[in-house]
Length: 160
Length: 160
DNA sequence: CCTCAACAGATGAAGGTTCAACTACCTTCC
DNA sequence: GGAAGGTAGTTGAACCTTCATCTGTTGAGG
Image (cartoon, rainbow over all chains, first blue to last red; front, side, top):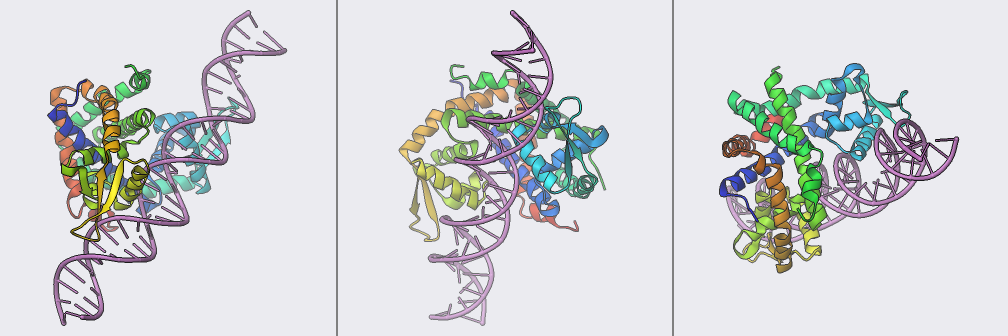
């Protein structure tokens, strides 16, 4: 059994503490100033960035890294807010299209400056250009492993 | 208004996607193999690493980066599992001590190898020694800003 | 002393996420 | 064309987290 080296452990603990606090801070800022958690902000942001501001539920789940169930609940809530509209997909009657409404776009435009300011203040204003590159490189590598087809299966297997 | 540069934005999106997937993967592994989410694993781990395996609730909240409320709920659940025991603090009658039980220690020892294996597989087996150092450096910098006394107030202030 | 503010913790309701079904539709292939 | 299996999405229950509120306890100043 290979445990973590002291260097790895220390890096890991710092990572865990930081992501936990950073997530909390960003969520609190958005919830407070715009009445939505960050996950919902990301849904609106991804929709806003696509032609027609419309995406199939599955594709929206993929770009926001959320499960279908989670997205379905989230879109239900956003729909109640009037920020997203669902409509049946003409090509495939299994699919549903989610479209950002004008009110949703307005809410996003309202929320964006505060959110970006918080991200900048907590993260990018504190890092050098080099570190930003390192950050992207490191996480792109980890992301690669997580999205590889059998990444989950391999770790979840009992007899690995 | 300063938005993110393309480099920053790309780094940020990769970061968000990765942490979301990594968190999910680690949580699923622990839940599946040991019946606890990662937050609860961390509570047990922090308790196990301290003389007497005992900590005041406030201190435990601090080392696990969780709110008092969250910790209180979590410890209630862990207590129902028989993994933690609460007892009044003799020095200060406001405080409560949380102590890891033998059953709790056993559960932690059972869960640790799988969890460490998952962390290693997803993160440290994919990074160079240099990158581990960069990771720690970057997050230590961000953490520093988050734990500074007025970090939250400054961002939450409407007229910042 | 005694009041008042601060601190430690618990609690219940509201909201978000996960998991396990379940429905409906499409595709493959015999 | 009909059965079988996969895909898209929803739903409800269980669980976790957050927020506001509440009870006690301690400490500082009058």
